[in-house]
Length: 100
Figure: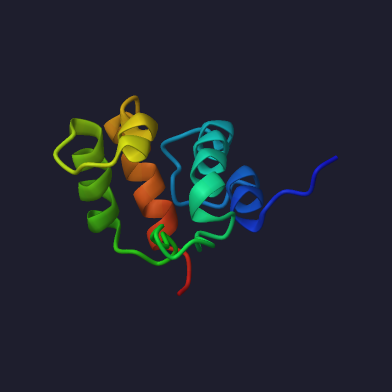
């Protein structure tokens, strides 16, 4: 069995913040984020921003801007286009509460 990254492990263990989503739903979203932003919220590529410790309102605003196309990024538009406001809020809360 493949070892889980710490980010996914915390989500599946029920570590709040994102109590509004089931842990499986949050875990699936975090796995998608981890592909580029790292399993610990720290990207391995300097062109990709770290999410760990970012302010929740900043993450919410950016994800909504990617989703609407206001902020341009083909990859992020594709990833965010089906996110609900609840999912965006949960992701933002989760990443913002990770220690720097």
